[in-house]
Image (cartoon, rainbow, N blue to C red):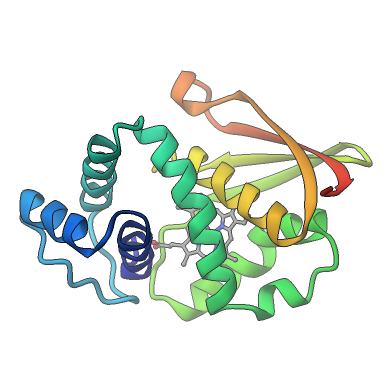
Length: 182
Ligand code: HEM
């Protein structure tokens, strides 16, 4: 994972739990806390940080990853507002991740670790995002999608009936668009 992802996790922990908690977590894991945005670090380092945050907050790691996805979306949107400006609806935005946004990410960062996302539209108000990644961060993807929905002020229902954590070869994230959020 790129250092920028670690930087944003640090921001979230400091925001929610304070600087002391972040320093304690780094001490406990023996990490120095210096992550250069464009440099890649082992995924295990990120997973260890998430594990420690989940122990401190007494929340399952899955909940921490999901909440981090929402926070991450907000921070990425702030850093790269141009990607949101070009898409008028949440559905168009989500459809642009694989072919536009992550393509731009490949130009900005050297060899980023990105998922492959393909799409199906069984109905006009439904989008199926087929997520594939050796990192199996489908819950991060769910959080990012929830973050995008709140940025676009749209109400969605999301289900995840097919999942690599249950032995499938990909995840299906099914998003139903319910119009403007009330
Ligand atoms: C709903 C919107 C998005 C979804 C579902 C999504 C999905 C993901 C996921 C799941 C990962 C983790 C890696 C993996 O699973 O293999 C990832 C990584 C990443 N994404 Fe996205 N993404 C979204 C929007 C964005 C936006 C707006 C940006 C802005 C530039 C962005 C930039 C990145 C970067 C920099 C990484 C890390 C690459 C690395 O660590 O090497 N993504 N994305």
